[in-house]
Length: 333
Image (cartoon, rainbow, N blue to C red; front, top):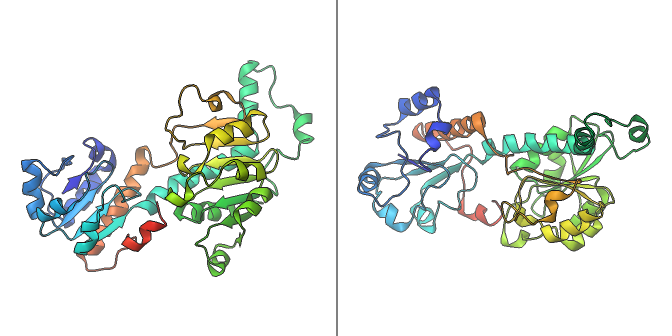
């Protein structure tokens, strides 16, 4: 059975993906449930063994599980399962899988593009070209005399060796840049496998030309980048956030960016969107995009495909590729 926002199946499934699901499982309806309390939902729960869920799936509570005595698996075809999975799910020993690995791919691609464009000073040159209607484009002499422009030899600080952080590190290996990482859960051996050096957060911030945030939104990470941390960053550095606005003190960021000491690329903010009066909207050294780094359009199909792979493996008696365990939730998104 499917449970998610009503219109989502149309975006998550192609004809081929529907056929793949229906080849291995009996699907009573292609229509997604948006509530577990209706008569239809109760009838489906009574027979369901697998729940394929996505955004806006209602929480799977004790009451839901009482109505679903045969439920053995929740295949979540998005990233964080926290809005859906309750203690009752863990108590019953139900397998939970996530498509976070699939969601990480477009976010990492977007982050890489942001790093490259920001360090090339693309947005300032675009704005100048637009404002002057082509009269002022690339000022070659100014560009040649400014070693801050460009990607050669740049220092990239990654905050969080998450799924996305690790993919970004992998992408950056193909460029002439130096990459270091801060993550309290990353061991020295883990850093060696990634081919990077670990650094304490404050040292990383002072060292990097560009800092990219990839930490989870947890109580301990609230405003982990605040006034003290921003003050430690190098003059002219870029701060890129494609993780969660929760991590960043936006008031402190606005103060640092107001004098153009720092630059920022924000795909996630808090609140989302920022209020209309936020000064960040008007700063030429701040780029804000509408939380678009994650899966959009055809990228949704990658998440569905991974969820179907997990279902196929479960039905074949094989181990899941990306199981979510209760003990993991304290350190993941």
